[in-house]
Image (cartoon, rainbow, N blue to C red):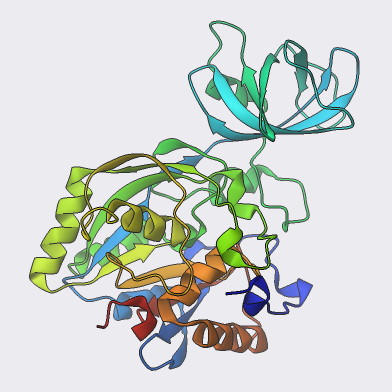
Length: 356
């Protein structure tokens, strides 16, 4: 398929720049993948879409304050976006500067763009493709440095600096495992109160950990989408979660993935046997139309960028024309798009393989 097959026009004013006052105040567009039928709801109405035997699978990754500013020892200003933590005091990062820093050089960190250097610094140890390997001084955990001077890594389509509100709102209420540089945004809609109501309905929950990397925003540049080099992200799927999926199948319930990261996690863990098996390591799974889903029966997801790998994933689940028609309806009804925007609840279409 072609990249241009997944193009749609979005009025810029529909890109949500701030979260709503309440997490669950978002709208919810429900899409029946089998029929293509749409229904306009509010996010708490998700409760009515779920059945007592269903299993909700969440990504419990925690976003780190991964954006930093600083300067070279020679004075040149630069911006750092951590891609992933690789150790207690090491990381791989994107660096934006007029000239790339050289291995062995030191970066003096500041709290704000253009600010004076403070007490923290990082050493550039090597170049790794488009990324730079960074190391904190011995005895200084990098995660602690980030907590002091790092900024929340808001997506590029949010055209404002991060603020105090983002510290909590660009994080799910169940975030636990530190390591993501972008939020699993479908989970942002769940409040503690809604989770309690879902549990009271008899819906079970399980967790995976996929540390979302900055590559999630990487555009598809190849016209033939099969030629797109998919980025890798660290993933853990536990034996406990695999057993929860198996038990759900035995009860006749549905596996409902909260977010495309949970979808990619469960599908990665199911590659070998057709059912989720414990998994620990990187995943670069790329799901696009023609893919047959092994684990996921329904999903909660936000709206995704035109021509993105995530739009291709949801197209694989219900069909390209079906999802693009839903997006046209959402635009006509003035839904809010992307990370701080509204959500969809999607059940599998015939293209997914789950209805066969």
